Image (cartoon, rainbow, N blue to C red; front, side, top):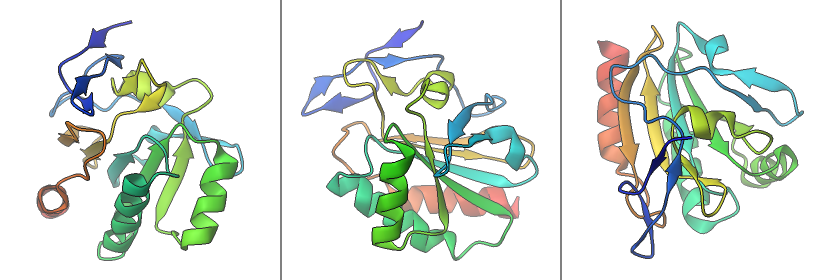
Amino acid sequence: MKERNDVVKMRGEPLTLLGDEVKVGDMAPDFAALDADFEPVKLSSFRGKVVVIVAVPSIDTAVCDVETRRFNQEAGKFGDDVVVLGVSMDLPTAQKRWCAFTGVKRVKMLSDHHDASFGTSFGVLIKELRLLARTIFIIDRDGRIAYIQYATETAHEPKYDEVLKALKKVTEG
């Protein structure tokens, strides 16, 4: 499996990302992750919609909590043509509990814990931690990757304004 060491850090120390690197313009690789009921959900089931993937290390950490709540809030500003998927390595039961506690309903949480299908397909599985790197992907209606943002330091929130600007461009484009 391919490894990259020059993308993300934790407390200034480089981490190793596993899987194939995807780039803007590539067809988004299909993956399957589990929903709150342990049912597999494939990315391909959202073809024809704009998909925002918010990958976070763990929903039970402060930065991931803030980030996912923010995207839940922003998701309400876009129509039914936009799907926001939150993906982490947390168990579906933990994600379900967190969503119930926080009231997050517009971000569809998916667990990649079973076989890291998303993490390895998108090249964001952190080898040292078996967690996902904090990354945002925007996939257009045709299934192409239109935007990628890596949080170069795992403890940092994404640049929301850049993501929202890119999403606006994709939805209007």
